[in-house]
Amino acid sequence: MSDIDQYSSAVVKVTTSSGTGSGFYLPSDNLVVTNHHVVAGNRFVAVETQDKDKYKVRVLQINPALDLAFLECKEDLGQTDPAFVNSDELTMRAKVYVMGFPFGRPFTVTEGIVSSPSQNIGENNYVQTDAAINPGNSGGPMLDAEGRIIGVTTCKIAQAENMGYALPSEALVKELEEFRANRPEQFSVKCPSCSQLIVEESDYCSHCGHKLDGKNLFQEATLSSLAEFVEGALGVREIDPVVARAGYEFWEFYQGSALIRIFVYKEKYLLATCPLVKLPKTGLEPLYRYLLSNPVPPYFLAIYESSVYLSYRVRLADLKTGLSDDIRRHIFNMSLKADELDNELIDNYHCEWSKESRREIDPKLKGPKKEWKPRKS
Image (cartoon, rainbow, N blue to C red):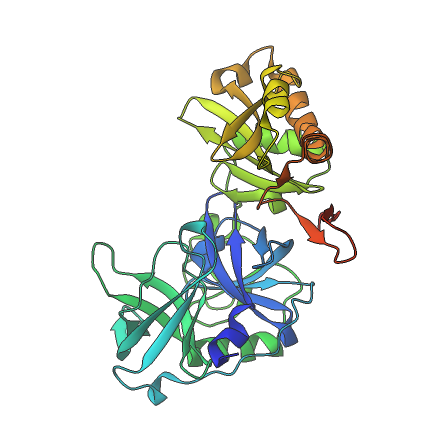
C-alpha cells in the first residue's frame, strides 16, 4: 500500500442541509477538520466514510479568518495521526494529491504539482496547485508524495483552470495547538483579531472589540419548508435528519438493506425511490407479471437499467393541501416496504441484490444475507 493510500480512508464526506464538502479525521483529537464555509450555519452535521457509514458530529470551533472548522467526532474511524509538512519545505513542481468528494460524488484522488508554495491572497498565504479541485473538495487534505498533509483544500479560482489553493499545514498545526491548550466545551468562534474564543452571539468581540458578523457566525441556517416537511416525516421513523441529509433538499439513508433516496424531481415533484434488486438472468416472465400487477400502491415498481426500483412521487403543491398527512405517512411507510420487498423479490423471483444494497456475504452460504446496520448518531 502506498503512503497516499494509507491515509485515504481518513477522508470523509461532510453533509449539511445546504450541500456537501470534504474533511479528514485526526484520531488523537477526536476531530474532523474541514472548511468553515462547508459547515457555516450548522451546529451539527454528518460525516460519511468511504464504507458509507454516517455519523452525526458537532461543530465545535470555527475560524472564519482561516476558513477552518473543527468537528467533534466521538466515533473511532480507525486511523493513525497523519504527518504534516510545512510549505517552506515544498518546491515548485513537486507532486501533490488532492483527496475528497467532488460534487458529493464518491471519493476521488487527483494529482498535480505545486504551482507556488506560498501564494498570498488577502490576509493569508496558500499553497497553489494545478491539481483538479471541484466543489465538494473543500475541506479535504492535500498531500505530498510521502502521504504527508500539505494543507487543507480551500478553494479554486472561479472560471480559471488549474488554479486551486490549500491553507498550508503550518497554519492548521498552529490552530490545533491552540485548540488543544484551550479546548472549548461548546460551539465557539475564534476572533480574527485577538484569537480569543467567543461563545455568545455578538457584533463585537468581548475581548478586543473587533467587529464581527455575529448573526451569520452564530445563527443556524433556516431550513426550507420542504426540508421541514420531509425531516418531520423522517423524525416519525426515528431517523436523525442530520444523518440523513445528503445535500440541499436531498436525503439518503438505509432501512435494513434498502437504500432510500428522497429529492426534488423536475422541480415539480417530491420523489422517494429505492433500488431494490437487480433482474435475474432467466425466468423473467413471473417477475414482470408481478411488477405490472401494481402490488404495492401508493408506491410503484419500475425497471431501470436492469434494476427494480420502488418509488413514491407526489406533486410539491400537494404538500400544502389536506393530503399532507397522508404523504407523511406514505414516506414513513415506504422505507419499511422497501426492506420487505427486496427479500421477497430475491426469495420468490430469484433476483439479485442491488449494488446499493447494504449486506454482507457469508462464505458459508451460497448467497448474500442481509446485514442490519443500526442508525449511528
